[in-house]
Length: 416
Image (cartoon, rainbow, N blue to C red; front, side):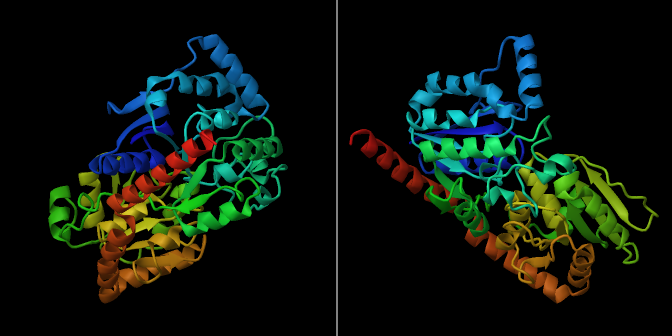
């Protein structure tokens, strides 16, 4: 089959999940292209959706629709233009990933779904809410949104804040559009399947669970001292690794956690991703900063060199970094939010701290660093659990079967 994947960008977590799936699908005979709103890679399978060629018109539309709190609505023509492209016409299946990201008008979804069978992977909560990608402790998405608490408290808002709180209107428009389009939804954990069943927007849509897959040969355990030697890291220290970012991914939380680890001694902390910690070092901890790592072999080396991988997310789905770490045989310490418990069973593959309890997070780090037997057990279990549940070939086969089902259902309905 020919699959057209659609995502906001060709970089970031959702894009990486799409590429992993595309690569695995190709191994079982299915071809894929990725259409994005913003292209950065040189991959010849990636196509950027046509942009507005009139800079003034683009700027005026952006200012207007952002100011009224409906930024996606300015992309109606751009989204409709997708259906005229050869790669759309040739596709057997349209597989949506993140359609939020300022390039796609979700109101056009029924128009697309009338032309091609649509499968939609939900990488966050955006489809269930009036605007937010993560609701945190707000439950207004179950009732219709409006009066958005994140509108006033914009510190962790995703997508970025806009001029007016139109979450109620957005919520109702999404409900109408998705009801007409009837996309086949895919979520990557049971926690999100449950939320889809609780949302009036998606509760009547068909929803399946398929984990994001990884290449379990590319990500595999490397002997720790060998990895450290190749990376020039301290052979004798205990090593922690994290890939944080500001806001939701807990850069500030990680900084406070490290401050509480200063009395451990002989400790190295690798902070990857290109961000610096707001942490005042007293030279008690060896901090190693690494830019964004876009080479999976190098990333696997860093995971393998670490004793523990830390993810202090305030909210999340099932982060690829956790899956990559456990498949590399590295136990993880993280908060028990979103679908994270799917990846890190408590004290089996790492430590699940109580949500946003930084002291419990620190306790988890200390427990695993001090108990070599437990840490080694978690390392062995992590690899076994990761290969069993997150192998990209297994995910690709499940998707291929789902594509076949969606394709047959679409054309049967066409001829009824």
